[in-house]
Length: 281
Image: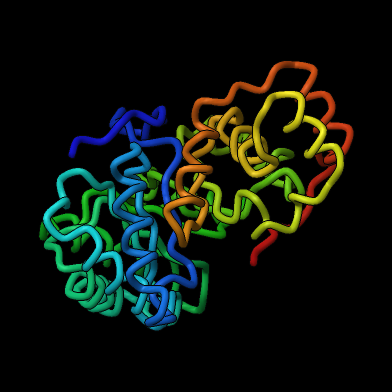
């Protein structure tokens, strides 16, 4: 089955990827839910949510194994993302970690490989590993996760560092700190921003202003929260463990928030008034 369109966002290379994708944090850890989670991932691809994000950390590789099983035979439809743990992120370790991820994912290449967060290894080491993986055809793009402005600026000064494609960070209505400096920096540098936990793991869905906007638009609070992230020009990767949840998330890609709705949300979830440290979950 060919995927529907869910809207796209361009990478620095000009390649277009789905603006609304699928996260896999905590998936693959409960055998009783495996069939449902596989069905959810497959439906998401059918509905155009073709960016699938995972990591070697998630369930100690269990999420990657689930993705590999769910998307077997559909590899060419997917923009597949995984991440290397910072403890593995020296040059040789980055290559070895990627190769292990590829085995669990049952594929020969990743479309995007990220440093999960910054650790003890110099960025030069990780970048050298990414360069080796690119040369071997095992990854197509590389990027980072949970790196703030100073880290991104340092990365950009390294040989080849300006090829960074993505910074994946925590971003949602209640976590807007990146709007002060990191988001403008990435836009200026043409680095695509990808938001994990775009509905704050459900914690923001009881806020009355969000519910009021949702009722006005005939949508759900989760759809409004996701649509808000998408209207910032940011890729959103909500986790979806059931087909019904996937269908609900997909509706966000067709939802446009008018000025009045944006004003209501801004009042309830104010934008930052100064620089704040990058938040992580």
